[in-house]
Amino acid sequence: IAVKEGMYWYTRIAGKKINSSALMADAWHHRTDALSSVGALLGILGAQHGFPWMDSLASVVIAIFVLVAAYKIFMDASDRVVDGVAEEEGAIREYACSIAHVDMLKTRKFGNRVYVDMEIGIDGNLSLYKAHEEAERIHDLIEAQFPDIKHILIHVNPLP
Image (cartoon, rainbow, N blue to C red):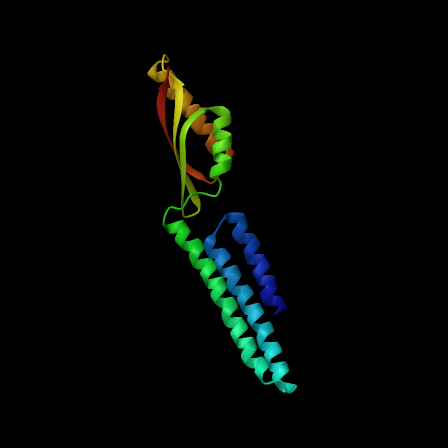
């Protein structure tokens, strides 16, 4: 039980460090092994001491826990596959608004990476070259601030 719980923490830390949903799922696998062993131990001890129903109760509790863990893993995996909104969207929006006139910003999560689509307003009197330079500067600043961003697509709207 202690070894499986230790493996849970080790794998969880590694999964968070590299932002890996596969490692996080494996961590939960270790946790369910540890907890199901605790439940089995309690069920067996209870049955040996005259409480045979504890074995059945432990089995039901373990099954519920495994189902809850499986549901959480499934929901996390499905969010990553269907381009869910990135958790970091609020922070990205706040930072982008501090360095640019943001007209629209949308994020999507694909795997462990974030994709950003945004529209910014830039002085309409600037040359195309200068407007592109400004958009590129904003692009680079945001990507430097948020390492999980894979790509930012910026559309420039002219301000009057």
